[in-house]
Image (cartoon, rainbow, N blue to C red):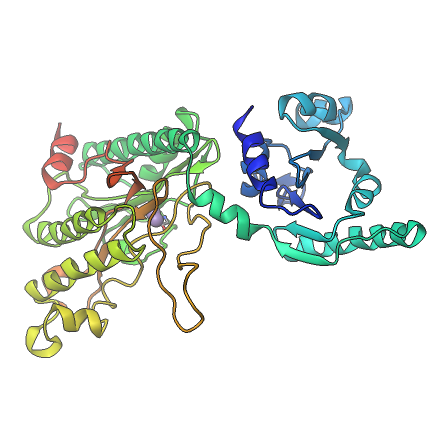
Length: 442
Ligand code: GLY
Ligand code: MN
Ligand code: MN
């Protein structure tokens, strides 16, 4: 039985006798006139089917019996747009129980809602409207023959998000491969940067190296828009213009990760453009690296999701005081800095997010046991994957010693929670000062 069928059966076990789940894939999106964006299936749909074609729906009942609607075979369209699996082949290849052409969905789906009380689907506005129409059709049939049709709706994401949060062995294998490809890309960009010190180099040339490395390893898409930020641009968190020149004295921050077989990776490295850190760059880099190490060491089953963030904050708060970016007489000790959030001008994002099919993956960060009066972070469990990405962003200001102005550093790795503690997926690209310098100068 394939992994997608196993997941459908797991979902079915969560459904009651009178409920049914409907899952659409993503729509195609126009980029310009008659040209489309590259197609990517919906993550929930792909998780349950492994099917990449557009114009498809799944319906799963409480026994796991699965109906798929997909594009019909069509010689003319296949000559223009590419091969389609078609309903007959889909039944066997995707191990679903029944298939129809998508052209028949408005006739064939509403009767399947009869005798059902509850309908689970990913609650988007578009789906709500679609479901409303199908339920209307079912109600008409209901009037004719007196059967019930669904009157309760529930958000299927509440179930599937919890499934997706814990990665199984096949998902972890793919995520390791995605991480390996991204590591290769970062290595290649670092090398290109140091080889180009005597030439004019644009950020987009480093981006091109990153993307071409993804592509040449079978990953056709980045998991998110790549950030290639030289010098002061690194202080813009979501800098994606990537069109400035790189000066040899600057640091370069690259936040880039590929998507491989539907799964994301997410790596940030910050390195000196010329291949050698200055002493001032080293001071800040080592602080962020120590914060990252403390954060990663806080990851183990049972630890709260916020433990890595708290560990990173401890190190960063002490370091900001030591470097004189914050002052003891004005801001107090590290505990005061954390309690009063005085670090926020220099570190304004969280340390971690879930990672999986989506770069900011689904799944609650809050414990289900939390009552309405307070929110407790959830405990980490074996198979969860999260990023660890502390940073410091030192814009020019009267508070900050001038030697640190425009330094922006983030270091990001992807970490899976294991039985004993954790495993880092992304360390095929170096992170400590000596190894980065060695790689760039060799
Ligand atoms: N690259 C997006 C992030 O780090 O969250
Ligand atoms: Mn991230
Ligand atoms: Mn990132």
